[in-house]
View: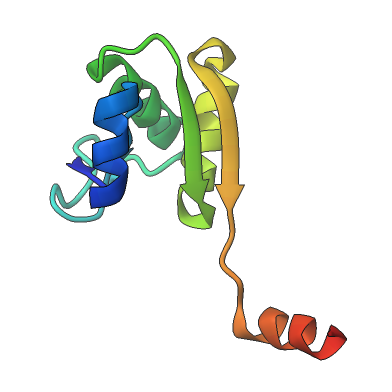
Length: 103
C-alpha cells in the first residue's frame, strides 16, 4: 500500500481525508496471493481488511475499472463498511474520437 498523489496529500492533511492506492493481490510488491485465491470474494475481503487496517469503520471506494471487481465484492460482502462506491473508466481512443466528431 502506498499513498497516492502529492497535491491530494496536502489537502488530506488539512481536512483529515486520506487516500491509498493499494496493489491488488498478485501484483507488485507482494507477488502471488498468499492463499492462492483470486476470487472476487477474496479481493473484496482484502478491501474490507484494508479499511479496518486504516482504523476506519467505513470508506468511500473510488476505483478505476481495474479495481471495480474488488470494490463491488467488498460492498456485497459488507455494505455497512462501504459509504460510497465510484468506478471511473478509461476513455478509450475510439470513444474519444466519436465524442470529438459530435462537436
